[in-house]
Amino acid sequence: MKAMIIDEKRNFVWSEVPDPVRKADEVLIKVAAAAVNRADLMQKDGLYASPPDWPQWCGLEASGVVLEAPANSFFKAGDKVCALLGGGGYSEMVTVPAGMVVPIPEGLSMVEAGSLPEVWCTVYLNLMMEAGGMKPGDVFYMQAGASGVGLAAIQFAKLMGAKVITTIDSPEKAAFVKKLGADFVLDYRTEDVRPVIEANPPSVALDCIGGKLMGECFKNMVFGGRWIMIATMGGAETTINLETVWRKRIRLIGSTLRSRTSQEKADILKALQTKLWPHFTSGKLITNIHAVFPMQQADEAHGVLRRCENIGKVVLTLE
Image (tube, rainbow, N blue to C red; front, side, top):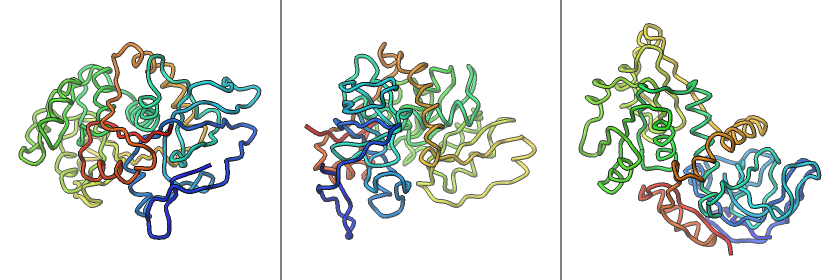
């Protein structure tokens, strides 16, 4: 088969690689679509390798058709599925532990389905499991509201009845996230989010930015608030008054999805299928596809994310 490997000069090359060999508990999938995530950009730059038991090329989620499955599994050849991966989605075929494969929500296309597993598992993991869930009246804060994770997190928080504060960097992105129900949408280039945070103290924050602003907003969390760090795109250093942590009993939680075990990921996917997939079928939840590229144009797809142009997901497809 072919896969989009990264050569010694950190360039993408559509190359022949050995066909994957399915283990007894795995599903073999013919890939139709694979979404692009910021972790893929880091991997291409040599900063975030796949776990050792996964292919060493990019791709954290994919959709496609089952070619082979364990005899006692839920799946059979011909089923349309999507899957969470540790790597390897930028290829013609991939093998995946059966628990990390789920049926496509009824009514969704392969492109739409290929954009679901990574961001929605990230959101469910962090807002339900790490944060302990949300309830009506909670205030949720997340920057980068027009990113794939941002759009998913906003919708999930509104589904739970929370008020949402988010930041963006263009009028087009602002208009889109407002349609999803975000209550406070600020352009971080021209507007200061700190007065809004002071007036509406968050109970839950999902932070992919970090940097100086993180510490300045952290001090305004409510008593018992949960601040979850998943990345540091704005810088890895900030200043926090530690008395704030223990006086307000605030939980600062570091979290990644990629390092979870296959069983942990399977549990999250099962919850998504049961609790959220029906909302995609009904249209209550959406996945916004910003752009679609052929797999061979992975560089162009990465460029969209590097320039922060996307509203939602960028997806690579195979014929």
